[in-house]
Image 1 (spheres, rainbow, N blue to C red):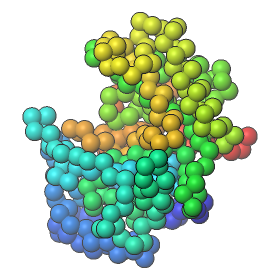
Image 2: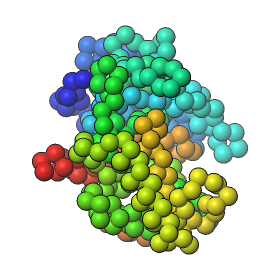
Image 3: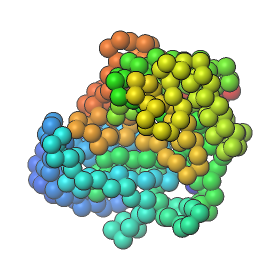
Length: 317
């Protein structure tokens, strides 16, 4: 796969679409896309439309692509929007590209135990605009990149998903995040928190490419069990939901080769258009920590991406 994407040079500082017609055709990097139903409300609580979703993905394209490049994408789509708390919108996951996928969308075939799926790749801005057109709100990727042949690279990041149980808020996740940071530092790993845009926090620890899948998975499991042992009153590392009430569940299983995590800078299909946003540790220590929405995420584009800073530092070292 190419190392450089079109997003490296394109100007994404302004929205792609202005207010206007419900449908229009755009050309991006030589690709023509017909965009329709642009005034459809995807998030009724905030009035956020399909046009807003497409504009968001256009503007965050350089950052999202940097983290998702060459990773097979699993899409989560809400064709008629997320709905309301009383009447939630229907959603579904989609791995395969499908017949309606434009020919120019890059893709890779990944072999699983029982089948092979052809996943799209978010390697250029036009793909993100197309995803917005198809009502894809969430973009999920694995902890590895793919060769053109479909063979998997070794993992280039370790991920811990901190999921609050009943009675636990984001502040409880933040406390466990800080403990996980210390544990990862003891392993020689520099961690970055990402507020998930849902309920919890994702902890990313970029890897240098020397770790095997077994090492990444076993290390994440061992770390989770260690934190559970040291902080049994607030941490649980087992899958059983009955044991999660009042505690933070550390989901280490997303380091399995077949698992995915919502991509940094992806929207979430919640009642509000929240986003998985890389954060700085001083924010995690702030008692006012909260999930950020798409407007707040866009405001951060003038600042460096904390996750990319750690990745770049690892490459220099």
